[in-house]
Image (cartoon, rainbow, N blue to C red; front, side, top):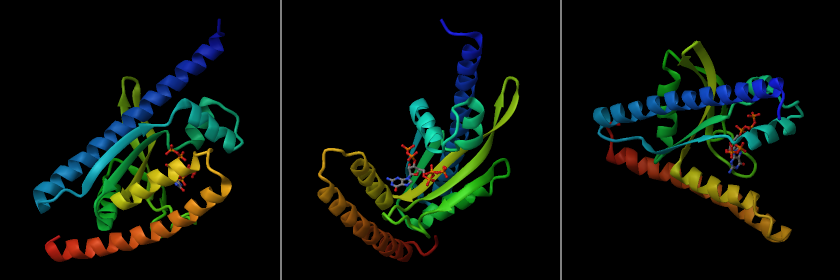
Length: 210
Ligand code: 0O2
């Protein structure tokens, strides 16, 4: 049996979580509308694919603990901005910025925070543009502004991040091998970045009107 307070807490969390999901739906629709319009206007679609995910309650709590904050719905709302996440994968590096800029310009959403790990890659080689948007969600009892984290990256950056993420969570490797793979991945990130620029140059040559 749980107390009324605990029940209210759980209900509060479920409501908050549902609003974040609604926020991700709003941003997802905006991105696919932009992609469709791009296709019609320039005869090519900048977004290769999109993924949407909700951070699990377990990871939300882990993140609060990592930030040394007490676990509460208020602390979640005030400190965790990537509960709702969308990953936008583009073929070309320029599209990362063109799609992000078109989204940033939309008058009903605002940018809360931006981290450009493409201009300033992490020391392990991680590259992506992270933008946290605040988006209004209209519900039966009013309007709520919720944060949604959008990660913009190229196919190459996504390819790299998936493998690196796997390596981080692999515990059955000896530390030497793990270190070697990390060093290898750091080099591959730079090579992929070179490749991104070279592919972009050929694409631009083939599509001077874009
Ligand atoms: P998951 O499973 O994707 O949810 P802050 O929000 O500023 O307090 P945070 O969360 O570290 O701090 O923000 P940051 O740096 O913007 O990174 C958040 C997310 O970016 C991570 O989410 C990853 O998805 C991705 N990311 C960041 N750095 C790396 C990296 O070095 N390698 C890979 N593969 N991904 C990275 P989560 O919560 O870690 O995981």
